[in-house]
Image 1 (cartoon, rainbow, N blue to C red):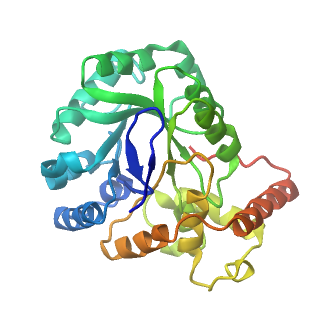
Image 2 (image 1 turned 180 degrees about the horizontal axis):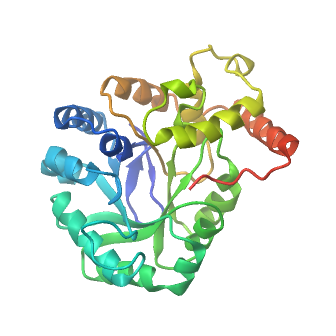
Length: 307
């Protein structure tokens, strides 16, 4: 698995990373998660992404691969108020308590990266939440800090001296952050992670979507339909959307890693094979960018990144 620079962290991360939301939200069995994660690590995937709010995800990752802690860059997210964590949302107390719980759940003494989980721009500007992560970094509980989110808030976070990593939505159906966020990240040597990198399989019928992902899939599906472009238009087969989508995301300038969430070990080989082909060629990227821009203009809307 090819690796890329993770910005000013000095780390290198695999092109493809594991997104831990589905194994939590979709209540995956532990034995399936163990098979999935170990297969990914064995194939060279070395970034594992989770969050305090991904029901059961942190615990599942800790139970299944904490014994291989040196094999992966571990990323989690915090800041939102939730049951079992004292403190108001985005307060220093909440950030600290969520981090301490994450260390226990993930069975580790440190996180490589802790991100503030999609807070508003005003929260970042107030500085308390960022300051709490700086304190945690200085105490050795995390190595680097950053922000997970989109649009104006993510662009602002990319300019903060202490922010080393940004996670943001980038896909064939979510292109606003390519210029708005990836560009300032490049300027400031910030490591970047693309979330929703295959657009929640927007090409599927909505009846095939599961759980909370229906909400994202509806919007992405509407965008893809408006783009009026098919795999055949790009020189691919009708079933090649997953490969096209992932390789489009990997082609974006300044991107360090694209995370893909799955609950099935059988999907691992497909994702790895697509990533191994590398970024989508420039002409095909340009066609997808143009289709997005034409559709956005025709709808008379600005298609912002989905938080």
